[in-house]
Amino acid sequence: MKIGNLDIKGNLFLAPMAGLTDRSFRSVCRRYGAALTYTEMISSKALHYKDKKTAQLAYIEKEDFPTAAQIFGHEPDIMAEAAYLLTKGEYAYYENCALPDIIDINMGCPVKKIVSGGDGSALMKSPELIFDITKAVRDAIDKPLTVKLRAGWDSSSKNALECALAAEEGGADAVCIHGRTREEFYTPPVDLSVIAEVKSCLKIPVIGNGGIFTAGDALKMIKETNCDGLMIARGAVGNPFIFAEISAILSQKEYDPPEIAEKLDVALSHARLMASDKGENVSVHELKKHIAAYIHDVRGAATFRSRIFACENFGEMIEVINELREIYN
Image (cartoon, rainbow, N blue to C red; front, side):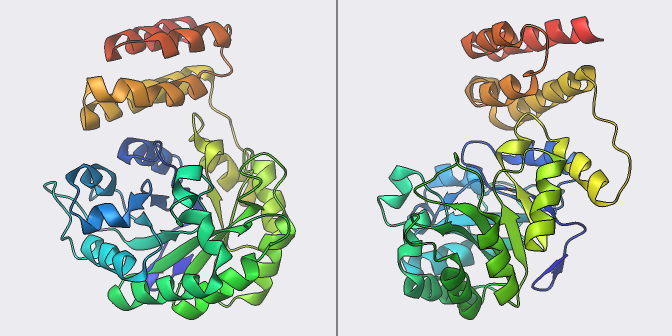
């Protein structure tokens, strides 16, 4: 798949997710076939004010290719500055930090604290502002630019097509459409007709997103929308193997799902990667949601999940994982 001038070897992408898609999780998903990964959301204002804590979110390993940096905000000039800082390496506080291969603009986040500031999916109330932001960022960078949208703000204003056309006119090289409105968050079924409509009208690639938890979900989205790529979000948490599963069904190959023992080995590897990256004291809290998802199908899962969430340090969490590994190995 090609986005702008960047050739991507595949069309299965790991979605940007706040508090989840750090470099350790991106690395694990890439191992199983994610062709493109995204950073967590990065505040354009934080970049503008040189907030050093944001550097942790912006860090990209040189081996983590290709990776998109996702920024959010609503002021065209600040957004353009943030994109410029990232693509020119002027925000690489960490040694050996690679530059993002793509800049992605978040115009789909439904979280209250984001939309209350006029960011995320609140931008879909103003296609004119979507154009202005996209054009400002496009003029500031020389790398591919993508935009992530939703079906609309609410059921009475499903304007994904109008917003996607504004992004395309502003210079976006691809758009991603989540087939739910901001009002719907993540609960109802995805409206595939919205994605299909956008795909039929745009000249640039369209990526489908929302409700992909199985290879069957992925196949249905591609068949009903004709989208160019798929973006997997919550379906990959605790299940990075979903990329291999979807790839197999799309290429009409047999797929052997991982045994529980392999899942636990990957969970342990993931835990160690995160600890190496962020330190054991920091990573234990962020790891809990990942590890709890990895073990959802083990015997006595509810009890083990409770133990995972009760862990107060990294060593305790490793003990629980290893106890499970002894059972299944």
